[in-house]
Image (tube, rainbow, N blue to C red; front, side, top):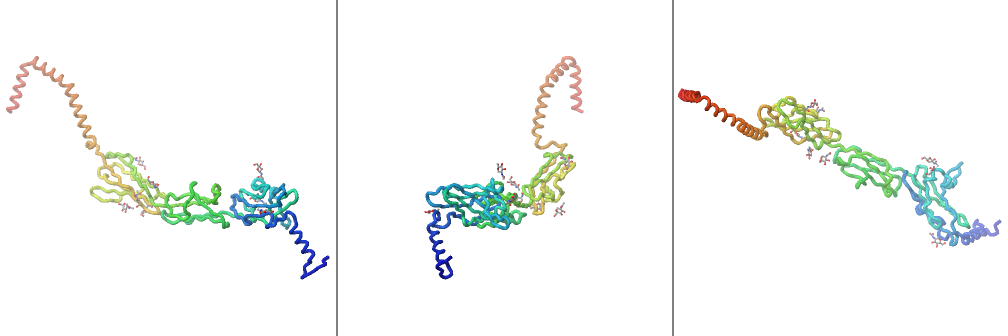
Length: 364
Ligand SMILES: *[C@@H]1O[C@H](CO)[C@@H](O)[C@H](O)[C@H]1NC(C)=O
Ligand SMILES: *[C@@H]1O[C@H](CO)[C@@H](O)[C@H](O)[C@H]1NC(C)=O
Ligand SMILES: *[C@@H]1O[C@H](CO)[C@@H](O)[C@H](O)[C@H]1NC(C)=O
Ligand SMILES: *[C@@H]1O[C@H](CO)[C@@H](O)[C@H](O)[C@H]1NC(C)=O
Ligand SMILES: *[C@@H]1O[C@H](CO)[C@@H](O)[C@H](O)[C@H]1NC(C)=O
Ligand SMILES: *[C@@H]1O[C@H](CO)[C@@H](O)[C@H](O)[C@H]1NC(C)=O
Ligand SMILES: *[C@@H]1O[C@H](CO)[C@@H](O)[C@H](O)[C@H]1NC(C)=O
Ligand SMILES: *[C@@H]1O[C@H](CO)[C@@H](O)[C@H](O)[C@H]1NC(C)=O
């Protein structure tokens, strides 16, 4: 039923539509009544996302209801299903907007199947309005890796954490501390587990990757048991080191006044039995793993002679001898004096004879 037709268009209908558009109450002059700040949102699985949204309506109206919907394919037809009717969103979606102009939505603990189109709808006492466009939410995963994952101290290491989201920045943590640079020269203390996280949501950490830093033996030391060696006894020298992987090859060397460093054994423990003076010398152990080798500091082994007095105790002996002599004198001198006195009183003849003997002996 068209009275005026021009260029294939029905002029009456067009005029009616234009009048409707201009006069329709509630139609907001600038754009749609619902505006999404970012219609294409990307977020990481397990994290939280905020779908920022604002809405507008004619002054004087009062908002009575708001709701978010998800586009779902049901029986081959796309339908908008209210999130409140989808059990998987019940505790994870949160309307953080209000009944004025903010219609933002937060979704927590994001899952793969949260990917999709989201719509907003609000009702005033006069009209219900729904967004014509949607927010498309993409859920992606963090792909973390460290390469190479086994290095030697000093080698370059790269931490890489990727997502499909262009706008998402990621950060790395190790032992609760953020890692300053994702590319570094590995030191022994850099070994361990690294966690990647989304910047701004650091409490949620994903995908641990581990780095193994290998190094040659360090801090090599020798333990002498017992610490003082007596001639004829036995002694164990044990070589210990810090290494990754653990040292598996030990070589023992000894030097003394008559020789420079000579190999004297192998194995982590060097057992010396019935030790004698020839064992005296400076000992060192060389610890080796597949990365390299390193030497302990030298340890002096001296053998104490059982028969001769050890040098250290000579002054003690002098002291003891001195005390002994004094005790002897104090106890025996009175006895000697008494004995001499009694001899002189009882037998003067004998005394004469003995003095004769003495003279005779001296002459003979
Ligand atoms: C809402 O609409 C009013 C006019 O109806 C306009 O002045 C205002 O700028 C709009 N606000 C937003 C956020 O679009
Ligand atoms: C939501 O949380 C409440 C209370 O924590 C719980 O009872 C309910 O089972 C949860 N619902 C779903 C769908 O997870
Ligand atoms: C989404 O996946 C979760 C498990 O990850 C499942 O419990 C839930 O039913 C799924 N929801 C839909 C709508 O497919
Ligand atoms: C091992 O080698 C390093 C580097 O040459 C050196 O600093 C260290 O003192 C050596 N000895 C031990 C016992 O680690
Ligand atoms: C070696 O000893 C030093 C000092 O005690 C220490 O700082 C260092 O961490 C040790 N090296 C290893 C590999 O444990
Ligand atoms: C030395 O070690 C061996 C075993 O390795 C042990 O039988 C011996 O008693 C140890 N000797 C000393 C003096 O500790
Ligand atoms: C220790 O290293 C030396 C020198 O490389 C080698 O000859 C020896 O077989 C090694 N010993 C063991 C037990 O691996
Ligand atoms: C360790 O000591 C042995 C014997 O003195 C020597 O041949 C070797 O070169 C030393 N190794 C290192 C790494 O200092």
